[in-house]
Image 1 (cartoon, rainbow, N blue to C red):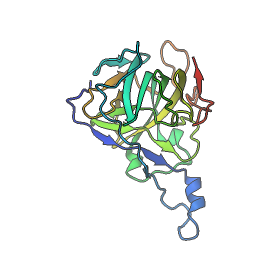
Image 2 (cartoon, helix red, strand yellow):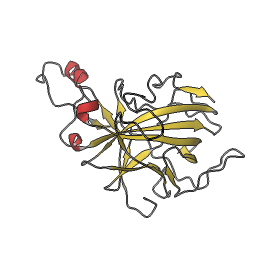
Image 3 (tube, rainbow, N blue to C red):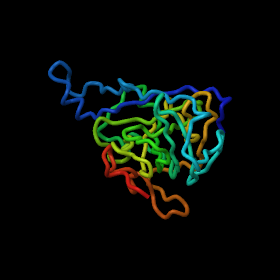
Image 4 (tube, rainbow, N blue to C red):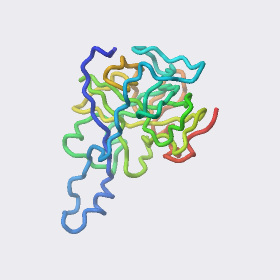
Length: 246
């Protein structure tokens, strides 16, 4: 299991553009079917600050740094979204799936380097346990691959139905709860080892591990598949439809 002593490199967020949109935007200067553009975000999400001493509401007990959890376990975490905003979340990672570009990304084009990546879908539920609205923030989860790469979730310029990989709703107030399916592209054919909450390099990460199943396969005990079958987060987008009070 990975901890604070492990050297990890961070792969920033990727913005994926469908081939159809690229063709429409190419104009007359580029031939049809020109190489697509998959780039790092022009405005990458700033890495949250170290969080050993964040103030949390009375009665909230944070999960210890370095905790090794399994799918279905919940961690209570606090982190500095920025210098004036503290987020407190209950995070439950419920599923991890491997897929392929051929199976799930038809109509999407990747450059040669990114095409060597392995795509994964991760499902998690988030509950706002703090006192601030976290609307529009990216879910603070990464994956760790076998090359010790910390990979941030990817985003899409248009709807990606198999796994929307969207931010929290525009309003995500205290008490709100939302489920998200997040897309991660592990570079160089990397394998998903664990899901990680690690808001800063100095933070001993909280990790979730478990069987990474093929997309659509039934997970023992739950009687249903994931991905195209369950489509966690579908319809939530960045609006209010994906959240609700528990």
